Length: 171
Image (cartoon, rainbow, N blue to C red; front, side, top):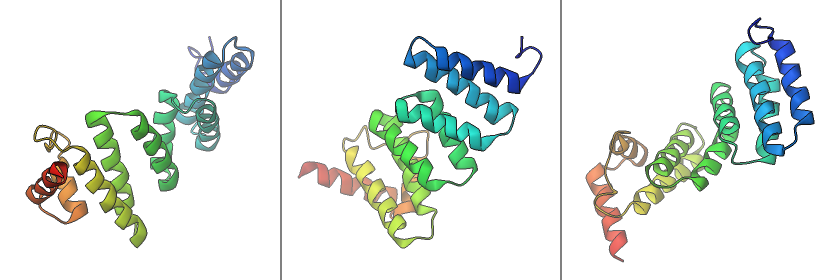
């Protein structure tokens, strides 16, 4: 009823009340996530939405919807430190190309700062990503244009990056 009538504050309160009374912690987190989405999208209350998402992730670090939404808020508010924490947790849970893209995103965030230490970390992180993908099939620029990203961050042509990664793989 509240959704159809677009009574967003009331819907948010009902969802929160239902979450408090939910039979399972998973259902409670999902309902809180829905309430946070209403705060974020319909009511433009980013602060309260962020607080709800962070609470959900404290209880369940693997909650995908809360993680995505919180990353979106951190990115929009230029909270690079918060965004990197979310991305690092995501990278720990991912494999293959998804992990590679997430780690490259972390490197790009670090590289975009003016802090020398973070730029160094970005370069080391990207080197680790490339070394992690050692086989010829794995070291492929792919649709995400990894080659251009790697060249820009490391300041080295893609062919040399691949060559170094292959040599490291033979050791």
